[in-house]
Image (tube, rainbow, N blue to C red):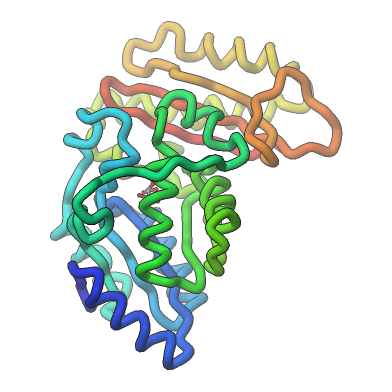
Length: 282
Ligand code: PAF
């Protein structure tokens, strides 16, 4: 495993790989790795000559400073986990200055309105931070393909838009959501859940599955009311939002139309820990 902290060092390695016509798969992460990340790395290994994994808790995408402070940082076990997948990975673990220089600022993006829906509404500035850090990473790593989980479906759509706006040649690959056997979507934030919260949180996916089941026969309003009901009396989980939205522009809908692809999106607080999930409906 080649572990780099300095931008210039990884850039040199990557330039050599490009000279040898090697394809580069890239898995950007914020660490606290779980089997979902490892599955992205495995897929990247299948499709590319070399794989780069970055581990960087990006400050500009946190709208809540407490969330940034408490974000799990587990570098040693992350590296150990990565080495169980392959000894041949390139791992990039920069400090903030390597990415941002002296001023840790996000750029202002217009992602065609995708940034204003759901997560964008509840986490102002979040997608500017994600777009900015990925623009820097794509410039440094110059990957052939980059891999993202569908748990952050809105992020995935925005990253596709980012490479269009920035005219970058990287191919963006979305990968299915990985789940605990309980149904809870894998997330680095799950490490912060208490025993009780872990016990209750499968309700999130259970609810989404029922919505998918009923989507053909019930109205959007009835489904939305039903979801609110599921969380109303739950003492552990607090619903932040539930929306049924078009896949194409992520705008939430009140009525279904034929031949349009929809997805249901949900955000729930378990104490201070914010969990998101989504499901394809048709
Ligand atoms: O999904 C994440 O972990 C982050 O948003 C990403 C893509 C690594 C950018 O910091």
